[in-house]
Length: 205
Image (tube, rainbow, N blue to C red; front, side, top):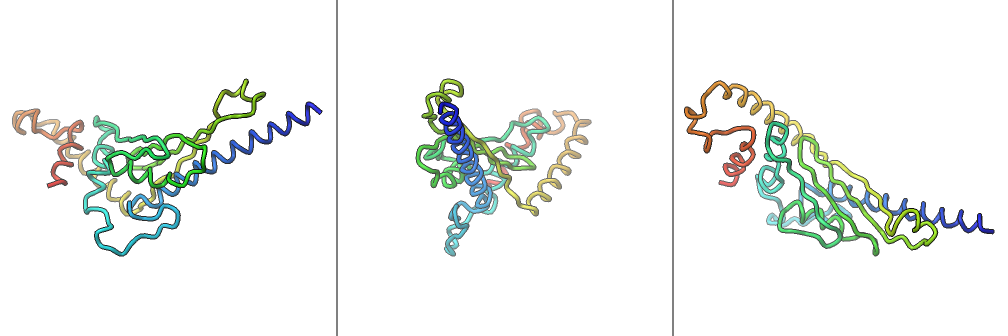
């Protein structure tokens, strides 16, 4: 009889774990699919025909931290953002998009979503739920979790980013032979560490 109860509890544990992984996968996929337009419905992908309900022309370069991400591999800062879900939207565009994708999370689940910008753009969702099975709780702890990620797929943008990195990689290599004073000093000379910031300022003008 005891063995049957233990098997049932184990089945419940595995079921909850599967539900967390499924919810994490769905949330990440919704965010990745609707990433190119914050006005998209995260569940259906539909959006208004209103011209104002669209992203700005250079939102990837500035609001989406693309420039900082592309140059992180050559000395710049890593472009990543994490929010708490549900209801953890911040002031940034990335946070708004992730929070919108997590609006329909099942009750009782909470966790984090992370957008890590680069040549590849994965969105990772980690969810937790209270563990109420006392025998298993003593072994596994108070919560159980599940995680999945989905990658934003934009083929044209991917090729454009590679060309941008190739261009500036060659430019930085050539500029190493030129003294900083001849380029206006360290404060204004473009380097791998400050390229993302300087190009973002240009894009916002």
